[in-house]
Figure (tube, one colour):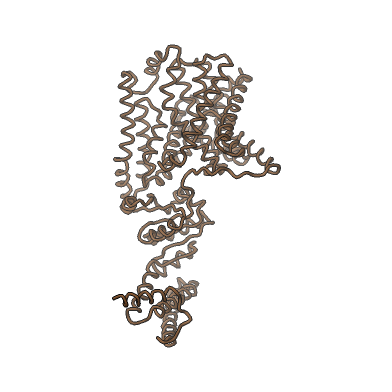
Length: 633
């Protein structure tokens, strides 16, 4: 049996055992992964060997995470969150770096080393924070919005840090060139500085231009083939290609993936990309957390326990106080401010990369870097426990302190009120009526030509197969009130109604039916309301035909209403025998004959010179308008 299979067996077994137990204990999946890594690591059972190769693979989970974050960062979102990103986020990085640097200088570090340590430790863990907030149900609230804005600014700050940190070395960065040339996988490390700058800008331009003008046409071509597995492979190919390109020019692959996601954030394929890549993100992030747990140097912990504990607690306390103070200054109430500060109090995954980078650049020594690496890993492991402690304290204080409504800082256009599956001639009418009356909709369609046309008219339609429950969940079905099914495929419409009823029992499902038979199938498979696509249009056209044949407006209107009421009553009465072919046909004949008799009797009762009780204002208005038109002529 190969070593790879044995390692896969160990990692999977550790995850399957530890994560459910941690979740049952209320510790969260992240802490479960970290504990699993510590148990199978070299300082406990030693079931895995060198972590470097596994960590290189696992870090691709962070790359995918940043790509998915980029997909959420649309221009409208950036503008609506400008305060949280550039205001709160920028202030957090600057204030935390200065505070940690000051504490480091007080402990005896040179100002250059202290500032480098402050900048590195100002970063928080995007992976752990977002995963923890998702599990706590805080991702879409004010806490999640503020944390997301700060994390986004931190991730963007890594790019200038790669340029700034070498300047803090004792020789002003002269040692950086040889160190980076020896350590970097970059093909441009030996080039002059100006050529490196040109190459980096060129790589960024390739990602932006390719995403805008090349990738989207390619995805349209692939989507037209309707091969889901090829679309998934193409999404992964895009992420891997961007990551490789960024590594070749010496930039962070994760930030390159983030940039690619931003470029595609307005694309019609955003929802499908999110859904296809999400399972890989979960698996690889889990592997990343396990390798972080396995990589904790417990030998260093045992050798210098008080020093390490002091660094971890000092770091988390300083970051908490800085973030809490900034959030309060930004207008947040105490509870959300404390939640955001607790969530962001740890070091981040980029610290592992930056610490190695600073050692190679001659900014800090290897011994200090090892201590800080262990401190960052432990702070990441303590974050789920810190959030759990915060929740316990907040719950205990609820009885004594009045609740304060959090500030309203919109994260996005908000979760949808209605999810619409299919946006053809039927779905568009429903969608336009809903949005015109102030309701937020999320629209999915699988016809790429239709999507392309609608987006040219400014309609935000997303590509994807709505029968996929994971895609519906990504579109917001878990919080939406209604699901409107307006697909052109009869079988898929029934399939979607059945799946949605099982996965989202709270949803009211409204479905477009092709005919009476299809409507019965939909009702039996979970739809709450069905509407035959041609019924109302045909009925209204019949009403106009009656008027052209000499009926006054109110008589035609009443005849149409009578037909509608009788048809719907018959539809409900025949539903129990749907599927019993002979009985259904006989009952349908009787119903049609009853309808004819009712209409004839109603026609006899209504004479042109009588005032009818069923006269309504809409039909009267029609008649008066017609009379006015005749008089004007």
